Amino acid sequence: MRKKILQKDRDKNTPVIDYQDENLMQIILDSITEGVFTIDLDKNITSFNKAAEKITGVPKEEAIGRKCYEVFTSNICQRQCALEKTLSTQEPITNLPINVLSRDGKIIPISISTAVLKNQKGEVIGAVETFRDLSVVETLRKELQQHYKFEDIISKNYKIHKIFKILPDIAESDSTILIQGPSGSGKELFAKAVHNLSFRKDGPFIVVNCGAIPETLLESELFGYVKGAFTDARKDKPGKFELANKGTIFLDEIGDIPLSLQVKLLRVLQDKTFEPLGAIKPKKADVRVIAATNKDLLELVSLGKFRDDLYYRLNVLKIELPPLSERRDDIPLLIDHFIEKMNIKLGKKIEGISHEALNLLMQYDFPGNIRELENIIEHASVLCRENIIGCEHLPPEILEKMENIKVIIPEDSANKLLMLQEEQLIRSVLKKHGGHREKTARELGIHPTTLWRKMKRYGIR
Amino acid sequence: MAGKMNETVVAIPEFNGTVAPRLDCASKIIIAHLQNGQIKDKQELNLNNVNPYQLIGILTEKGVQKVICYHLCRRDWYSLRANGIEVMARISGNVEEILKNLAAGKLSTSNAIPFWRKGTDGICRGKGRSRRGRRGRRWEQD
Image 1: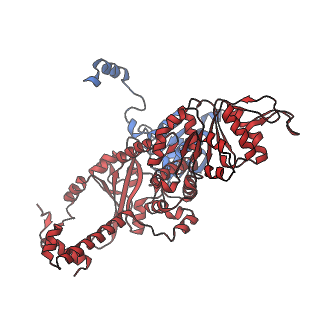
Image 2 (image 1 turned 135 degrees about the horizontal axis):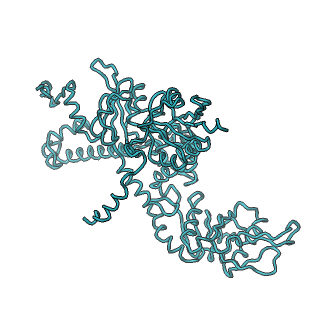
Image 3 (image 1 turned 45 degrees about the vertical axis):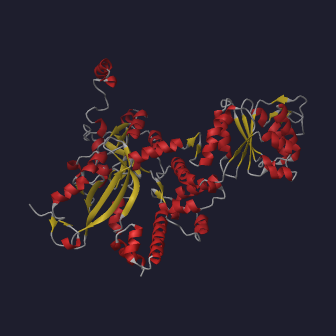
């Protein structure tokens, strides 16, 4: 039997494996839990390990000699083949999330890495692909996502989860709700969630953007009018309050409502009645009111722009939504959600976002909050022709804004910080012992040789 | 009208002139009208911005009766079947050749069923006896 490990280089503690031994290579490949297969320059499979058989469901005997795309049937085979890219650029690809179709027709999420294979002369003879089954990870991720979902709202932020906890109780009551939060923070989604959880869920959910309707029209929009109320009133027109009967009316941007109308609104809230324009008799309003604003209503009250009695009538139950910059932990979750949404809307097959692009977005301030993030993902999805959204797909104004901000890769920074602290600790203990290495090593609980090696690494003399 | 009745509309996802390895990821699909042993008409559709759900809709709209592909996921197989489209899977090779052979009635369809339905041809056999047996023995409580 041939010696598997050559004796030379023993003194360097680096055993050299005989790569010419095919049996040994197969044993090694089969012992790996990741799927491994190699191809030649014509994309014919030349080796296929046990894990690859298990993940794809294709026996090795059937796979060898066939085109890789016939066996592997991944979602990138026909459009952006990773092996083809590696063969042409000779650059390895690491941890690319894709999916494959197993023999039994199941879609299996996997992560792949590719590299070129060279012979002893350094000529490229093919490529190797390793892949990992992400089914369990993906199932757990989906389970977690369900855990982070409440009605149509997605969040794992503790502030939002606090709201999730009280939302069913708030919905159960029929009291007026005031939702305060910056523009684009999802006020309407919360209002809709309250409506869906309430006993009025089978009734209508009417949205009125008070800031978007001219002051002169707002009254007739909200309360309606009767025939003959004014020149063009040729027939009765029901207002939003009437349309929302037995349901919920969502008054967005309530802070923009004129003072004259605030009195009428107050009457609806107090007496549950309203009068359409030109009507003689008041009408009953069986409606739950949810108001929302991005302004500080209390400040408007102090400035005399908002009636204090109306404020207190609206502010029975208050929900305060934080801006996206205060719930950054939700950004990756929201990105995944919007990518899925855009895939359906645009007919795309985008799998995710690159680490660099995610890092960039994690540091961005999002003045337009979730709405802005959704627009960014839509922009990127339109431009993205690959499976992963990269920095180049993000809107140029974001890239310009972020140009001056150094992108920090968390793992790197943590590592550097650790090294810096280690260096400082060694220096201080060395100083304490007057440069005595043995005493220093003893205090640090490491071997003197280790200390010497670390001193050399940090340039400590 | 009689001629129209003999017409078969076939769709084949294409990749480099051959049958695409996977239906849901194909970037184009060939829709061919076969009549009286010949390819009467052929059109190519770009699927770059089409998701699988839209694809089924397009095929139904185009009156496709048969899809020939190499592999497809269960979701697509069930959707196609639910829309009355016959699926011939595990067929590979040159698209032109396949169309010609199909038109001439020479395409072997004995193995053209998806991998996971191999041996069953889409029909579940022996269901009743097996179910009765299971009910009687109560496997779950063993």
